[in-house]
Length: 206
Image (cartoon, rainbow, N blue to C red; front, side):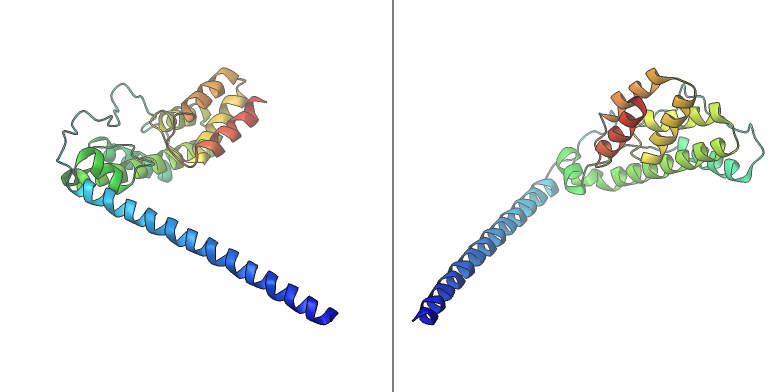
């Protein structure tokens, strides 16, 4: 009798468990289906968006920026400098955090190839600036390193190493106010790296 009771209780809980699992699976499938439908609707809307004027976007501007070109005899520095000089003559946009669908919705599908190139130029620029600043620091040219890294931060680089080295250099100079300014700038980043960068900067301020 006790065996039968246990058996029926076990069967009952098994049925309940299976029902709960089936419901959660159904709910997850439904959510995935809704998300997919929403994605394709946005994609259709994006592809039908008319071409917008993008001449007034916030392109990276080198005017008024003084970077340490041709000051030191080092091969890696020369390569970084040459790359930056090449990029200076190209259109560069920080589009971090925006998907292709977002860009088409905002500016029209016809502008996507140009915007993609502008974004790729930005990625190459901030990576080059990071390498440049790091190499300057390795060679003990810290003021020049600050100059390069500060420019990278000012245009919205989301490379954590850039912000970390810049904060380290400011800290070594006792420039706490500059680190606070970095935190204010980092708070505006449209990137998944924003929170890790802010947390790192808080470490220098605490």
